[in-house]
Amino acid sequence: MKVNVQTLDAAAAGELELNDAVFGIEPRTDILHRVVTWQLEKRRAPARATRERSDVARTGKKFGRQKGGGTARHGDRKAPVFIGGGKAHGARARDFGHDLNKKVRALGLKMALSAKAKDGSLIVLDNLDVAEGKTKALVAHLAKLNLNKALFIDGDAVNVSFAKASANIVGVDLLPAVGANVYDILKADSLVLTRAAVEKLEARFNG
Image 1 (cartoon, rainbow, N blue to C red):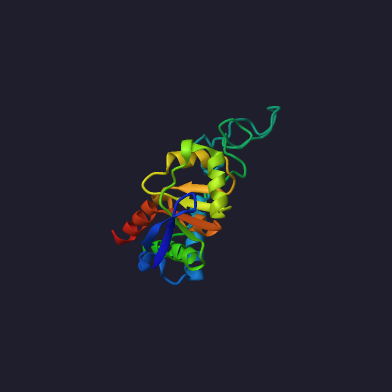
Image 2 (tube, one colour; image 1 turned 120 degrees about the vertical axis):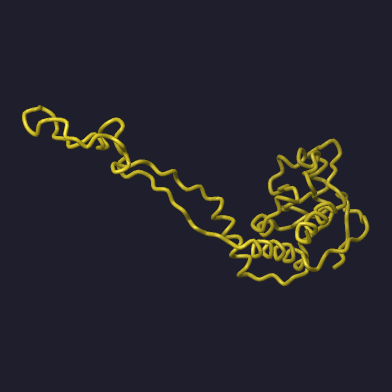
C-alpha cells in the first residue's frame, strides 16, 4: 500500500510503501474489543489488602474478668476497637485475572493501524520538527493539515521540539513507537506517523 508523505506544512514529501501485513489486514471488531478490554483492565489499580481480625497476630487470651472490672467484657486484643487490632470490613485484594495471548495483542495492534489506514485517518509525515518549539507555529501547522484530535507517533524517541510545542494543545497526544497501543490509536480521530515510526512499527512485527 502506497501513501503520500507530507511535511508539517502540508507540503508533499514523496511516497512511502506500507507493509500490507501491518497496515493492510482486515480489522475485526471482536479482536479489537478483546485487546482494548485487556488493556483497560491492566490499568486498574486494585486495593491493597488490609489485615482483618483473623489476620492480626495478637493474643487471643481473655485479659480481664467477666464481671466487676468496670470495663467492657472483651475476649481478645484482635478486636478492631484496640490499637493494633484488625481492621473492620477492610479492603480486599482483587485479582481481575484478565490475560491475553501475545499473538492476539500483536494482531490487535495491526488491526488498529489497518483500521486507520482503511478509513483514511492515517497520515504519514516526514518528521515532527517545529521551529523553536513554538505552540503558535504548531497550531498553524495543524490547521493546514486539518487535524484536531490526533495521536502522533514518532520513532525511538519523541521529537523534543514537537513535545514542547504540543504540551498545551488539547487533543494532541504524542508517543514514541514503542508506546503505540490499540486503545490510544482507536480513540484518536486521526493517526499521524513519521517515517521513523512506520519503520519501527514494521520492524516490531517482522523482528
